Length: 285
Length: 296
Image (tube, rainbow over all chains, first blue to last red; front, side, top):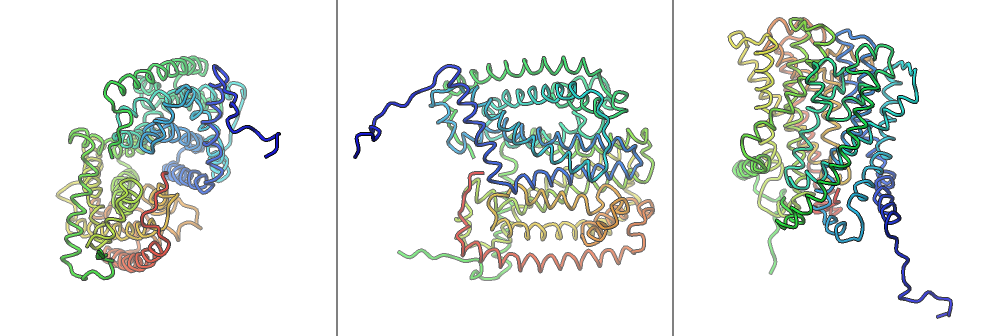
């Protein structure tokens, strides 16, 4: 063994504080992005399944003689379902899956912040899902010849970013709740698909549900996000919009802060409850 | 000590073995489906998804037509969507049992060595979803009749045709589920997707929520090759009578012809299910896939 060889017990430089936080975020986001490259068939199926659903709704609109802009509404809504499904199955249910597969104990034992892990999950999920959503939007727009009229691109970008931030904040918050609910989490995630597609107006302007229903549905960030995006993407969007875009932007910003603060509080609550009841690592199949 | 291993192929091919497997699997399936919560919540859960799914179409239709629910296209869409619940419930219910047992409960290997008939067991596991699906169909139908004036009048329903069509359709869907279950034996990474992909494709191609004439011409032949297309037409005709004949897609066929096509395609799927099961079962044993877990 040469003298330049590294000693067996060489100390490993350890990160701490914000550096550790950021490294944890990147470390948790990494498998989300890389994992997708290793399962390319999933990308295909995710896009394919969404296009099937979008196509079915587009053909319904065509069967009843709807204006062509409604086809565009369906395509944009179909693309955003990718984010909702990602939040449901890969954010809200994730800590429950991690518990089932035995990783949750490792997360808690490791000297890092659980908020950083949740943020990493969200960041990785956004990057991985954005690709799928873009593919759905592109393929759907090409197949059904959707015409867009973007008048205010910066506003569209702001709305999109705020929608995703609030949506993934909701996912981070519900991750703790789903963990507490345990075995029911799978059913709850399953349940939160069609009813949310309905209430959030994924396939039609949410204004048509009536003012108070739309107000209630606005707790799901995609409701106002989709509404604002449609107003900015289609010529008749503003006429069919629920609230004005500036109002929707403000509400989305409030939801962002609200959900992130609630996520942090619920993580602490979940840990306290779990320690008291000793249920954190319990597996009930 | 040598432990006897029963391969499904070497079991006595008696109805009693198949019936026992079916019966026990039905009970097991019901326990798995329903025991995660109390009956009230379970009923709410079973109703909310299908009602929301129907409501999406109702709102879409109402927005565009300003609420003209008396137009014949509305009951066409509504009933097609309501009875399509059976497709997801029965077909996916049967095939999901493989994944559930192998990846979640990790019991498929024990089930394999138990003295049961595996296809009968899978069919039994699908019964629970059939029951919850039937509940969802009933609730959706009742909501349509009571609140949206879907013109289904019990006195005018062709009950023999309805019951016969329903029975044939459920058998056909269960056989399609068996095909998917056999394929699931060979598939690890994509288990969430196979049932959904097939159900999604059939939803689009079978004219469940729009007449096949709306599809591009190059896609229509696929729709005519799907047994579900004929099944849904029979269901609509039995419930709506002459109103259902207003759409040109299958107006050239009599009820008898539609029943004949549905029966023929069901027999075809039965044969396909038997062949697929033999092939996939052998391959899964050869490749050691029976007890694989992927942690997805």
